[in-house]
Image (tube, rainbow, N blue to C red; front, side):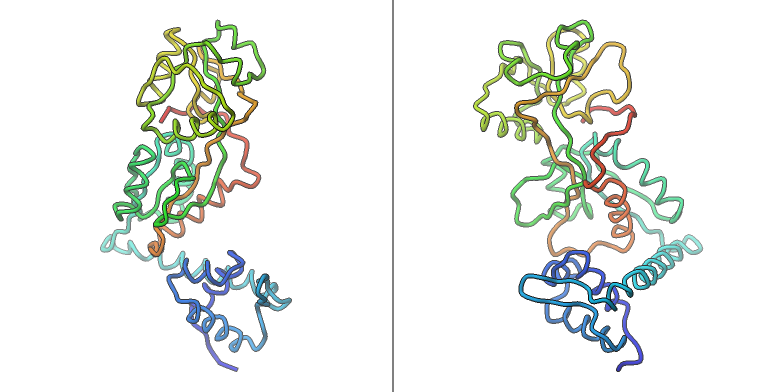
Length: 312
């Protein structure tokens, strides 16, 4: 039995249980799988008991492992919080987090979590790039930012995605439009109406086109704009109705614009965290990323709060 263990042994133990996979845990910690296995074995030797049961299809904690999880998590949290707290000691070593976000998510996801994060780590600064979906993916891939908040689903081998929230597409129309009285509309109801949509270069348009093609629907995109906020301006002017993500619509009662659910089919975009594979985040970025996941995790976080949001 060993008399001590290393901090990375604890991180390895939590990562394996979090991801239910030695492969994924090793990737997250930037370790080889044999090195990760040695970490787990070392911790088990220090404790004097097996902590993880592993078969070809199953990874799970033993009874001792389950009992140890809260203690290990508390030790890791306290250590990392102490490191982050002293990183700005005397103002000598300022730490900052860089991330890229689509504008709607930047407004919707970030303020509340940043406020909580700053209360715990007041010396850590943020650099936030509000970019289009494609620009944000490139910023993560080329290392300009540590991670991003983006529309998930792009097939890129160099990036990984963690879904936070499903955001459905809805119809936005003037309150004096006939559609405004409907509880929900089918996409077929929009046939023949002049629609306001975003450019084909947009990630949102790509999600829509793929879903509608699968449903064999061909709509009349009479106006095309680069920004969702512009489409809302055209709706206010009475030039047509717009299809856009619910996050991009006014989240409180608007005097002129109403939002109506679209069904048959329900089309959603998934918003999530984007990271470059093989890159290890800074301790500050890891803590902020974890806070985002806790706050806006997809499970149980489907309902959007009533707060105003600008369009991306």
